[in-house]
Length: 250
Image 1 (cartoon, rainbow, N blue to C red):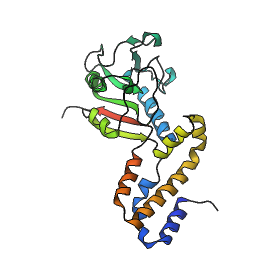
Image 2 (image 1 turned 90 degrees about the vertical axis):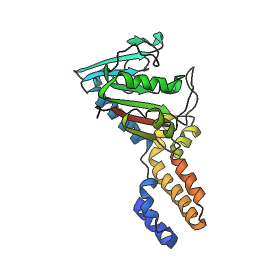
Image 3 (image 1 turned 180 degrees about the vertical axis):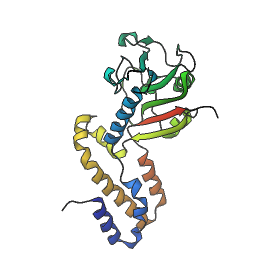
């Protein structure tokens, strides 16, 4: 017989009356996988590429990287890529902290795994806001618990830091890419994403069992500090996706 989430809940409720509040916390127990988040990101990038206007790939290296291809770009979309390295052959060679673009000149900005390599990410984000035309949108990805990579690698970001850095933008969403289990599995496999993708279907049930056991222990031992630790583990992803807009002036 398949072991479903509902059967696990019933078993835990039957185990101890003190575990009765558990169903109220189920949304935080049964997390979506990082693979689902990545699919959402890919879909969001491709949907943005189909929107009319100017699509600015900020720090994207060579053109058409970061989950976007020439086929994804819509007929009424003008795409261009900017990078500091001329070896990448971008459309524009420039520093993301000093964009050679007029204010309010682009409609959509994609910034994929760039800000950790920038010495002053706040300045880069301010430039992003300056060149974005209302009601433009941004899609940004940054790492958090991730190995050192590339020749220059300055920063890792928490969700609190990202909400502060992107405070000028409206409708801001900071979405975790996985959780502590996914991050741990990546490190244990030497960041073998193919292997992790193969193992990921089993993570949901493991995640539920571990979190349920921790919550049950916390309730029986009345250890609120451990509950705080559990919440902090939820904020231990491999990275973050940031969605934001620059809306019309009210």
